[in-house]
Amino acid sequence: MIVAIDGPAASGKGTLAKRLAAHYGLPYLDTGMLYRGVARRMLDAGAPLDDAGAATEFAQAFTPGSDDDERLRGRDMGEAASIVAAHPPVREALLALQRAFARQPGGAVLDGRDIGTVICPDADIKLFITATPEVRAHRRALEFAARGEAVDEAAILAEIRQRDARDAQRAAAPLTMAADAVMLDTSGLDVAGVVAAALAIVEGKLR
Ligand code: DC
Figure 1 (cartoon, rainbow, N blue to C red):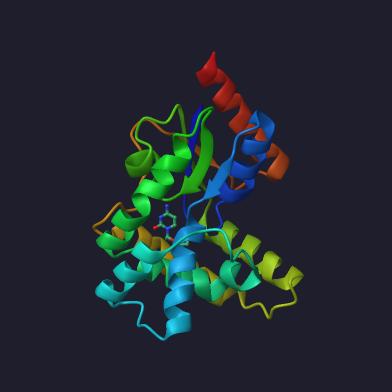
Figure 2 (tube, helix red, strand yellow):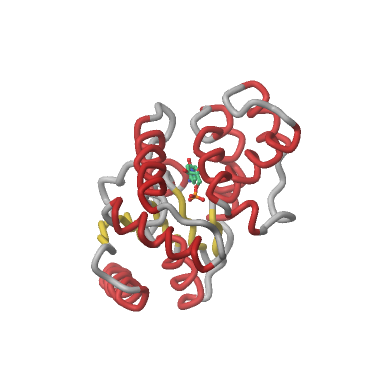
């Protein structure tokens, strides 16, 4: 079973994807980490993120896995990843790796922006996870505060809106809901509520 989960930043898709993967015993790939990894290597090398040629070289040389840490998950790296991810050849360079992960025996859970539309158009289950920008900004603010980072919720909201716009308006594989995806708005739900709602959707599809 391939489960494709898409949605904007801080919609709760990562938490849900991990929970579904554990529930069904499937491997999980957070595809945002691939773009974050490429962005990080560019920043470390002093390469400008808007240089499509350089970004492509870094994406082609990219191997995932070795660097899952706080810096990669941080606020600045999400923004940097969004810039890098808008270059079509960068997406092309990371495509085969994602498809191979999805097509392993037994299936997989992947989350990102274009899983149901581009990476796994034939996924068995497609979920589009969303929440209002205000709710997402509030969740992010709580996360940053819990990590001891200074929090300006208005600034986080502005960043979220900017990232949504860039991810949804780019030409290559923009953030959009697949025609056959089911939308789940998590604005009024806690984690348990989101997981329960998603499991009901998946079980309904499998029946
Ligand atoms: O899911 P995330 O916040 O870790 O993703 C960071 C950025 O990477 C996101 O703003 C856009 C890009 N991204 C993408 O373009 N396609 C994906 N499948 C996953 C992430």
